[in-house]
Amino acid sequence: MRREADFLKDDEAVLVYIAKKLREAKALEELLTNAAVDYVVEVDQYVGGFLFRTARAGAFFYVRADTETLTRELLARNGYRPYEPLE
Image (cartoon, rainbow, N blue to C red; front, side, top):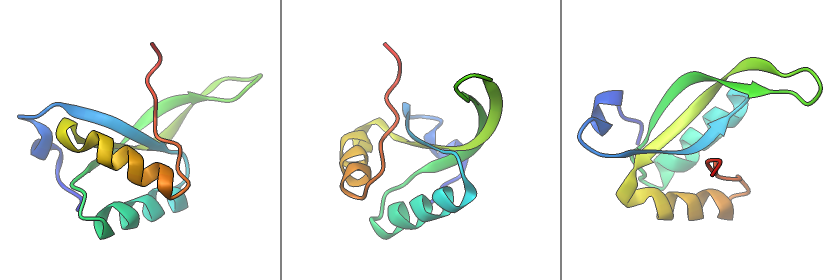
């Protein structure tokens, strides 16, 4: 279920997905809500493009650390590639 940003203020927020299109973000919201996953979504910028790198807006999906593994598995089972931070 979608929550407000202050829902994660006392917990470690983990970025699990960046939706680059509105349709993708809405579909992901529906998937997470139907699976009873609490999440926060915020619009932020990411860098995209191959030859000409530009800043673009996307929907960043965050969950609590204790639900990260289950959320990542849910995303992968449904054809989404969860966000993996650069090491």
